[in-house]
Amino acid sequence: MIRSARRLPWGAMARLAGRRALFAVPVVLVVTFGVFAIAAASPFDPVKAYAGTAALGADQETLDRLRENLGVDEPFVVRWWHWLTSALTGDLGHSSVLRQPVTQVIGERLVWSALLCAVAFAVAVTLGTLLGVLAARRPGSMLDRAVTSLAYTLEAAPVFWIALLAVWLFALQWDVLPAGGLTDTASEQVTPGQVASHIVLPAGVLAVSQLPWFTLYVRQGVADALAEDPVRGARARGLAERTVLVGHALRAGLLPVLTLIGSRVPELITGALLVESVFSWPGIAAATVEAATAVDFPLLAALTVLATAAVLAGNLLADLLYGLFDPRVKLSEM
View 1 (tube, one colour):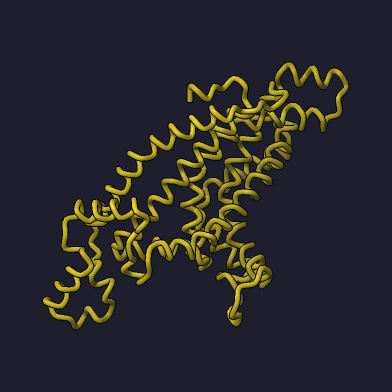
View 2 (cartoon, one colour; view 1 turned 180 degrees about the vertical axis):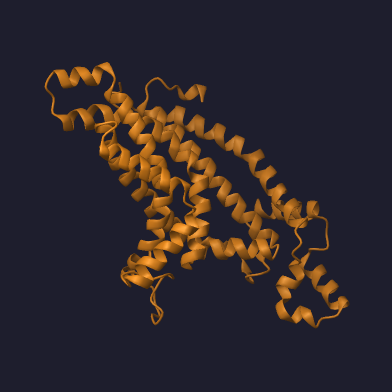
């Protein structure tokens, strides 16, 4: 039973973050090397993707010259090393397919992807906690069976299917929410009101795709906590049911959810890419797809490093939260 959160020593937190940062270095090296290797084996031709329709009428000499200018005639190991050494100085290269510096491509799109993921994650955690607690109050009841059945159903449903269903229902049939984009079609500027209305569907769909995991974890954790002797003793002392749930069972039941936060980051990123594609959300999804199909090495490597960093940061955050709320956990052993 966890009765109070303990204060983590800043030194222990810094040491854990430092160890994870050192561990991240070889991970990033391996991941970026793998990206360049896989892209080199791709059947897509970066030169034709760069030239577009002009490549259809170009002779071989022109294509070879363009290939040399883009640097794609070199072995992928050489291209990877050139990109890596430049990235260490802050130069992520130039996107051949979007005709922009990679830093500009990411900077223009990352804020919208981060907003979408943050809203969806907050909704999933809040709603999942509420449903999990309601289901755990009376295991085996009609409400418990309904919540768990809904969670398992949503868990099996592909996120793109949920997205298409949401567009058909809320945008086409009921016409209560916009089907996609960031602003209205006739609008020439981005306003908070338009962003708020356009983010409802994509963030809602992404939240629904993450909801089953939080609901089931909270439900199981709270149900186990309610069966423990300290909680039974609290009830026997005549404490209100709300106090027992919030002050005792929920605090202990949320511990497994802390580790779930880090493990859900990859799924959140993958789901965000699909949701952004369906709703034409101006995040990094379109850039990722174009970078992959056009074999845009610098942009593809930078986006992969960004996703890897998000996963590692999520795992670090989960460990720090777990160490904060569980006194049995020693950061020095993590």
